Amino acid sequence: MKRNRKVKILATLGPASSDEAMIEKLHLAGADLFRINMSHASHDVMRSLIQRIRAVESRVGRPIGILADLQGPKLRVGKFADTKVDLVAGQTFTLDNNEAPGDNNRVFLPHPEILEAVKPGDRLLIDDGKLHLRAEKCDGKSIVTTVVSGTKISDRKGISLPDTLLGVGVLTDKDRVDLDAVLATNEVDWVALSFVQRPEDLVEVRKIAGNRVGLMSKIEKPQAVERIEEIIALSDALMVARGDLGVEMPLEAVPGIQKQLTRACRKAGKPVVVATQMLESMISAAVPTRAEVSDVATAVFEGADAIMLSAESASGDYPVEAVSTMASIASTVEQDPYYSNIIYAQRPQPEATGADAISLAARQIAETLGLTAIVTYTSSGTTGLRAARERPQVPIIALSPIVQTARRLSVVWGLHCVVTGDASDQDDMVNRACRIVVDEGFGQPGNRIIISAGVPLGTPGATNMVRIAYIGSDGQSGV
Image (cartoon, rainbow, N blue to C red):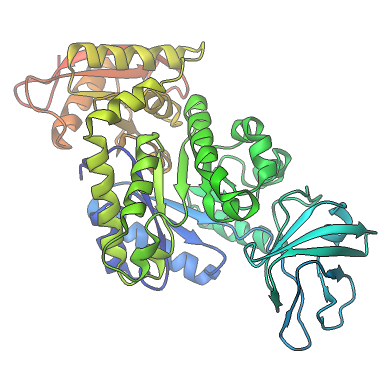
């Protein structure tokens, strides 16, 4: 199934989209991979969703990626004697280790790591920033704060700490159990890590997961933005999680950070997903707002690898319409005359590696000669990633003998992934590439393509050759 766009769509599954028929509708409407939110999905639900996705994959004959999104640390205040209390700006309010129900002077904070880490002057944002507190006195057992703004607080509201680096890792006990369950399926391609603060947060997860899944770091804290280059180096992909990022940082800073992260990932050749509230109004409306259309378009213009739907596809009233709308916006933007100018103006310099030199050459040759497609043979996925980093004008067909590689690459800009056996020799490599280009609808007899691969064939990470081929008159061979 040929897509008429290069940016990918990541759709979240949930109550509105959990049955197999709906998953297939979402895929046909444009979803290239699916997100399972482990904050809400039990292990049984996760396994059932995976089974249904793979059934759809088998039926449509296209590799479909699966991302499991771990919940991460959920920091919340305790309960109040009267469920909620009213506060006044300027008053003193204390968070402490006393488990007694709270009142309008204090509340229990069941997170000793916060009590130990917060310093005077740090901000504490409650209920998505509706209540703003400033720490005045901290002794490791309590935090005496001043109410800066906001007038209410109630049971179990979330707490954000934009100025505080917590001394705990990214994995909670629940996350470790969920990660084990995800890995045991051998069917999940990506794991998203919530509330990453520093590169060290990825080390524990990498030790557990190895290379069995790709690690996608969700950037939603200022501390992560400050060390983004190091985090990118240890991650396989990033997600710009604008929801919590917009709570912990000024809202007006988020668009600039989105651009910064998108460009940093493209420079590194790592996929980047833009997420949260992209078509939020389509949870309950059949059409998006003009501002939402512009928001999606901005992410596409910036060259993001994928754009994500959350509640729109998981629990909204119009999941299929949300996916098809997003696909339509992306396709239209990619046809805009300004699109190629913006994309190519941001083209990063190639790194001093054989793979980058070959990918650069393939793109330049394809565009100079007006070739029909770039075909890459990739076992590990690296060749496909480097080809996509170039953002060529012509389609990229990524051929892999490993289905897991093809599924993982489903999040990458511009890659049309096909699972096929390793070529036996260079003649087979050319014939196979030409045949697949025709079969997949990207070319016809007489067209020319360019092929990049590694010799000897089937050697991971050994991209060292390019070859131009004509598609034969039978559409099944090349010269």
